[in-house]
Length: 272
Length: 272
Image (cartoon, rainbow over all chains, first blue to last red; front, side):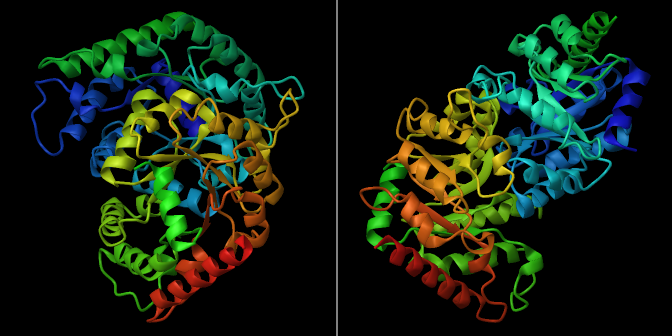
C-alpha cells in the first residue's frame, strides 16, 4: 500500500484532514503529568490516543526529542501509534536534506528506526538528495515548498528569470520530473493562501502538508478553499501547540481531544 | 572567543586547511576494529587522534550516528575531541533548517548536547530559520550555498530575474544582511571551482566549508586557488572517506593519519 493510497483511505474513512503535530516541549507540560524519565513519551501517547478519532495523521517533530536526548522516547511513541492506531500514518518532521550515502542514512533513521510512513525533506540540494528517500515504494516524502514563516519569502518567493517564483519551480518539479513513483507531497504554509492555491494549481493531485493554522495565525477556511483537491481531500492540515497544550490540568488529554475535534470540525465545515 | 577567531588561530598555528569528516559507516570498518556496542565511537576517536596533528577541524556527520541509534557515541566522540584536542573546532554536519521554536531545539541539540563549535544549516526557509542559531555568539553557522552534488544545480543554479543565480543570492545574504554578528560561513563544493571563486568574490571574508575533494573528485589545487581568502586561509577543505578508510588492517588509524598528512600537504602546496 503506497503512502498516497493510505492517505486516501483515511481521508475517506474519517472525513478528517487534521494532522496532529507532536512537538513535546517539557516546559509546557501540564503539571498533572507525572515526572519520570519517559514523560515525553507518556505525554505524546496520551495526546495521540485522545486525538486519534479526529486525526488523519500524526506528525512528530524530531527536534523536540533530539534536544532532550529522547530518541528512544520517539521510538516508543511511533511504535505505540503503529500498534494502537495502525491506519493513521506517521509523518516524521525532520526536514532533512543531504546527498547520496548520507541521505540513505537519514532514510534508515526515518523509515527503519522510527518506522515513519512519510518524512519532510528540504529540496535545496536537488534531485539526488531526494532519490534515496524514494527507494521504499510504500513511503511518502513531503518537500518543503512555501513554508509558513515570514522568512520563507527570502528565497522561496524570489522571482526567477522565466517569471516564476522559486517555490513554484519546486512545486512543478515535485509534481513532474522528481515524482517518479508518485511518492511526493509538498509542505505549504496556511499563512499564505494565495501561494497555497498556486501550488494546488501546479500540483493538482499531490498531498499537501499545511502547517500554520492555530498558533501561527493561518485561516482554516481560506486554506481549505485554496488547497483541497478537485476530487476531494488532499490536505494534511497540521495543528500542534493549540492541541497539545489545550489543557493544563489532570484532563489535559481530554482537552487536547476536544481541541482536535473542534479543529477537525472547522476543517470539515470549510470543506463542504 | 568567536568561531571565526578560533578558526584563524588554528589556521595560523597549524598551517592546515584540512577538515577531517567523521562519517562512520560500520559496513566499511576495518576488520581489526574489535566488535562491541561502542565501536562507532572507538573508530572515530582513533581516527581523530591519528589525524589531529594535520586537521584544522573535525566534521562529524550526524546521519551516520542517527541511523545506528548511536547518538550517545556521537556525544562521546565530541566530548573526547573537546578534551584531547581543545583547540580543534567541531562542526556538526546536520544541515538542519526549521523555524523559530523548532530551530531553537536543534540549536540546543548541536551546541548543548554535542558541544559543537559550529553547525551546517540549510537556508531554504530564510532568515528566521537562521536567527535561532546565532544566539550563542561563540558559535559558527555554515549555510549551504553551492553544494558538491550534481543535483545542486536544480535549484541553486537557477537564474533569478536580476540575472544572478540562487546560490549567489545566498552568498550575498550570508555576507551581508543575515550575518549580524559575524558568525556565518558557507558550504561550497570543491567540484565547482568557478562557483567557488564566485562565492569568494561575493563573501571575501567568510569561512568556506568545502566538501567534494577525494572520493567526490574535486581538485585540491583548483579549489584552493578559487576559495582562499586574500589575506591567507579561509577554507575548511573536507575529506571523509579517503581518510577514514585509507587502511583496512590493524594500522587503520595510522593509515588515516598518513592520508590526512598527505592531504594537508597537498592543500599547503596549493596554498603557497
